[in-house]
Length: 334
Ligand code: CAA
Image 1 (cartoon, rainbow, N blue to C red):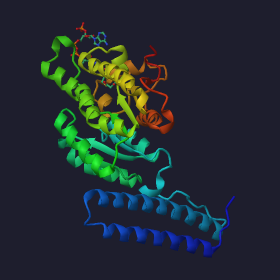
Image 2 (cartoon, rainbow, N blue to C red):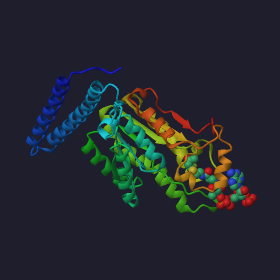
Image 3 (cartoon, rainbow, N blue to C red):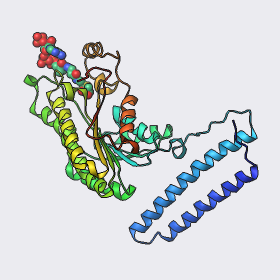
């Protein structure tokens, strides 16, 4: 049922928000030459007020339209990043490998739950990252992208420092960057062992270590490590990948114990076989033989992984730590 509001009330509300925006903007300009901290605070206050004002204007606009045109179908959530998100945790989230197959849907889910999301990419993906960011904007999601080689500890520390300065805090960290270099051990080159361990496991140390002090200081954090069904059950041709993914599980449980009394949770999400380029790169007959063993009878959709991550990232999930959510269609129930 539509709520009737008078045209005068609507205009008054609009004017009030406009004035509020102008006052904040003036204050921001006055502080422009002040020390960095003051400028940053003013900027963020401005951004928060602007975001809230745009949301409220959009909502009131929809109510007013409904009131003036009762028979029309009004979309109450217009597209545009400031208004498409549903109020939820409202935290800042970093997703490593965020522009990848699973990473994209993790970013989508976190953004749709009201978080400010930052996706990392590696230097050779720079062009793709710009395209990716545009695609997300077209979906109404304003996601920040940042280049970082997660195998390089110094690069991770630098990224963390810059993001914490720019966004004030990073509250959610999703370690999703990963690669495969499948081969049976008798054929595996040492470089393919090291590449997988460095990208999939060393990166978890590099990135988490770089953000952890801030979370400890603020007594709040959600760390979610993307492991794999094959880290839990092993897989023919994946000694490197399974070792790295199993290593993430051990890392997660240990860190969860270290941080449990400090408001920080650490968990894994273990996807099964997901319909992404990583699985598409496998020989079709092998994929078919694996799908035949999945009780649910299909590959996972990337959004099904994103939703599990968003659940663990939520403020209300503070009692879940050192756990794993397996999203594998029943492929492994160990
Ligand atoms: N179990 C037992 N034997 C198997 C087997 C299996 N699953 N798969 C192959 N073999 C046998 C073959 O029949 C063959 O036997 P013969 O020598 O007697 O003919 C032998 O093993 C082949 O061994 P090779 O070392 O020559 O293997 P290959 O070079 O032909 O292929 C491989 C090896 C590339 C690893 C291939 O098996 C493969 O692609 N496996 C799938 C690996 C996989 O599941 N990757 C997942 C990628 S997606 C991902 O990782 C995301 C996630 O988190 C799930």
